[in-house]
Image 1 (cartoon, helix red, strand yellow):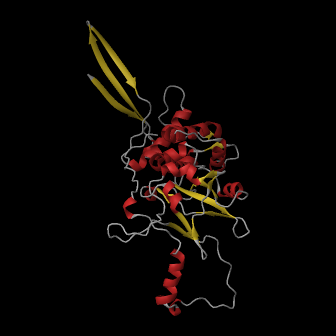
Image 2 (cartoon, one colour; image 1 turned 135 degrees about the vertical axis):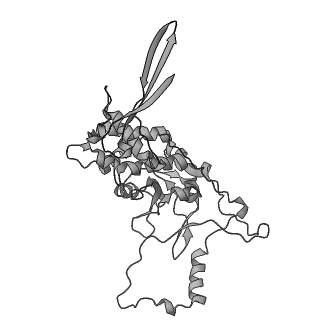
Image 3 (cartoon, one colour; image 1 turned 30 degrees about the vertical axis):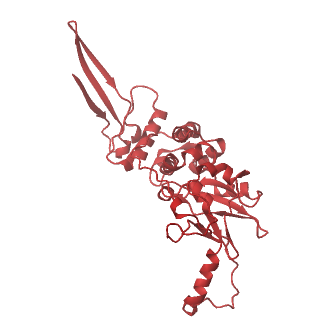
Length: 342
């Protein structure tokens, strides 16, 4: 017979901080001898919802970094010791190596260190790392984003990832117009990705960033297709401003193999009697226009002739957009994943 039971601490902790041990006991009878065999698992966290997985995994990681001897301290999180950055950095890097086959480099770790570290003694505290709107929940959301939608791009180094807005501007400002880089959003807790590009067309240096793409959006349109079909619409023209992936890789050289939605078609024929439509990922001129003169009154929407002015403006904005065959639209949809294996 084999029996097992849980051994756990009795302290009032959050469920994702409660550590348990599964203990296996067997009695073996052989040749007139009786042997008692016992084995114990490493600490486990018991959860009741998939939403608790990130916090539970954080507890396991923290425990593994701090508990190196017997007996196992199941009450570790009653008063959890802090970690040094030297302990935490390789732990975080391993998560990305495990999930996306590419570890974090020193620049990426430096950005995370600046975001995480606020202790004068150089320590990372448990509450700062794992609770409330924590750093770990944000990082875990990015790991899930890579797993579901970006694994190839991350593995091949096309995503710079962890780079601040300030460093993005510094890297791009002296690059040719149309140079862009891909980074993770710092503001969306569940994980999102954006791209920033530089523009010198007005004689001044401007670095623009598109609204981040979330997991829901990437399940409908892949990031390479979003980059390939992205359109910036200004008063003068509409075009794709993305030319070179930082530092100087032609866009199609980097992402061409991943395109699943064909580019604009040169034919104007209808297909199967359907009116053609086009897929457009569009931003309206991101550079704020100059402030109007003070003596110019604000536009009264009631005075606009909707039969002429509005539709003329709409026609000008969309005149340069090129259609492509409807039958070729085939959006990649990632299957739902119920388990996290990191």
